[in-house]
Picture 1 (cartoon, rainbow, N blue to C red):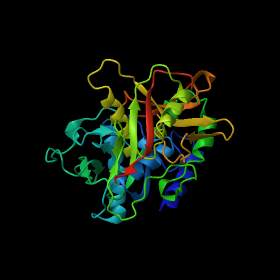
Picture 2 (tube, one colour):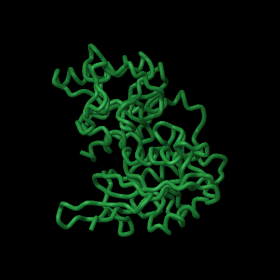
Picture 3 (cartoon, rainbow, N blue to C red):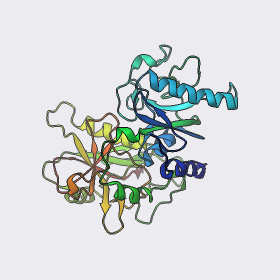
Picture 4 (cartoon, helix red, strand yellow):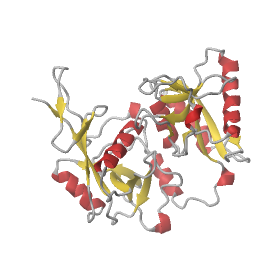
Length: 345
């Protein structure tokens, strides 16, 4: 399946088009964005991952014009596949707290677009459009498989070229889908349970994320640059955190936010383990794990001012906890460390 996704991406990414969008994408003039329908059914998180790799997001609906364009795409698919067509993923979710709906691209969300019949706590936390005559946002289980729509800015909305485009292109060429990635020898692996019924634990002040079976810690920081932050993590048998999915990214952002609850000293940004290697011309994780997921803020990475922005921070003030490239000598960033959980004796 993943090869079908990447085959469709070649047409989207590299084809030359004379209008506002690449061949195969549909222009939404009301928001000056290009909507790309990806036909292969996937789960919500895999759809987010796919869009992010190619510097886009699962589509957010910003106005009626966007909704009309999506309605046309949905009608086309229902016409081809019949009324049993399962619909299209859009970028709405409530995975942060299972209550408030958000867009994966950080745009403001109109909560009234979700049917009033949805109840907090129901296991339907990702949004799709399914009915052309209604066009409500329908909560679904995130593991359901649907086609999806990625959105990115049109050519007309991009007033200047990204000076970091060559570096970004080189790095994206190394990104591989999670389903085909094998860990490198230096990439830490979660503990294996010999009996299949093990319990896991973390050291005091560390928090386990069950989806990865790793332990994480947020550390306050006023003096350490990126390299010193990595060294500090290593003193705990850890590394600056690598991130392999939207769920892990949101978990880390929530962990960092919770660290500063009740204080007035919250940092707006946090160091991750991602950094740019001038030797290999790729982004790499400090723990040696494959670079298989990206969550860049729009327009990033941009190597602003050609200032050697070779390290990557998470922007905690953004709802989607997107990333920005930054000079490695900066400090006053929260430090996010990660290490494997332990099997409970």
